[in-house]
Image (cartoon, rainbow, N blue to C red; front, side, top):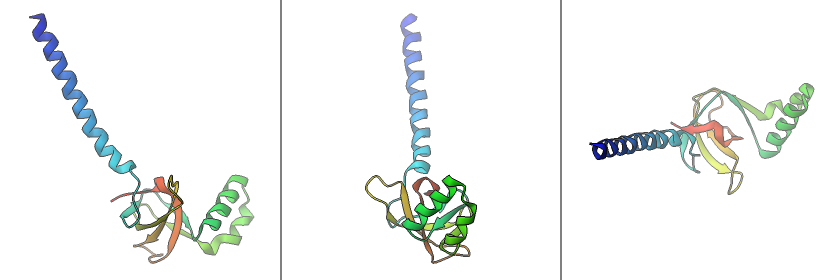
Length: 123
């Protein structure tokens, strides 16, 4: 009888492990970065920077609280809503933390800009 209980516990543990693995696979789809050429959507409302220099300037402005400095780059920023459809067209390197996307929907359709890779998710 003890052997049956051990086998049942082992089978239960295997079933739970498999279920958790499948749940992780589904969650990984959301976390897996898109590759160049893939179409996704913006996870949240954000601002895209026209080029990497503008992105760096925007980060400095945010980090320093330089509210007046935003005027210098305002025309090179594209606000996009959560859910905006985009295509990844470039990355900032092999271990990319930034991606360049082409905006496929919304008011800035056709423009391209840089953002954090975590803000672009699968559709």
